[in-house]
Image (cartoon, rainbow, N blue to C red; front, side, top):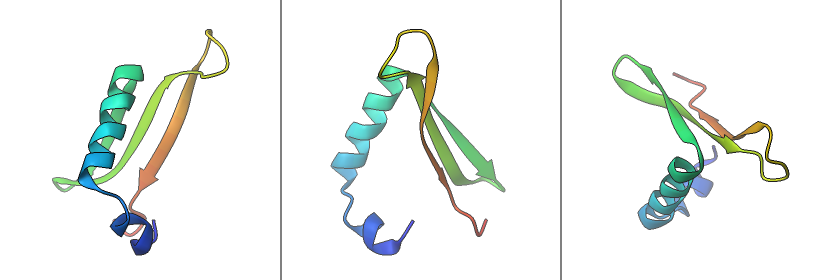
Length: 63
């Protein structure tokens, strides 16, 4: 992600986003050599009750 995008995000905002995603479904962290290098959020589809959805994938590509 671009640095300017990350600097505009507050701890409070990110905490609220993580809390919502954990209530809705879950999170998966990608760890390499004891460092978090990515995450994904998933949960129920927003437009239908039958299938799940992948909401976001964040990866540090230089890891």
